[in-house]
Length: 137
Image (cartoon, rainbow, N blue to C red; front, top):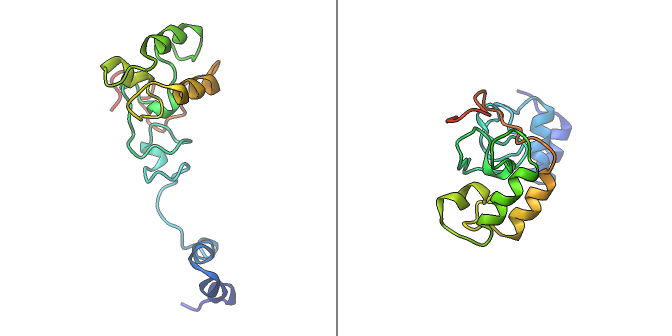
C-alpha cells in the first residue's frame, strides 16, 4: 500500500493526527460509538453520554446517566421530583441506585443538576431495541 504525503506528515506531527489521517484514508473500522465509551451504539444504553459501566439500576434499557425518569412514565417531570428528594444524600440503598445518575454511590447535587438538564424530556437515547421495557438487559 502506498502512503500519501499527508500520511507521512501525520506521523511526523503526532499520534492524534495519525489517527485522523488513517480515518481520512478509510482506516477506521468497527461499529459506531458516538460517546466513545467503548460500547457500540447498538448495544449502548445511553448513546450520547460516556458510560462504560452501562449502569441501569431500574433495568429499563436506559443507562443511569441518561435516565432521570424515576417513575418510568417515559417523561422526566414533576412526578419524578419526590423520588429524587427522598433519596437525596442517601448512599448505598437500593432506591438510591436509580437516582444516582452519575453512578458515584450517592444521590447528590450532581444528580440534581443532571435531573434538571433532562427535565421535560424523555429518557435516553438508548441503542437497545428493548429500551423502555422492564427488564431490558
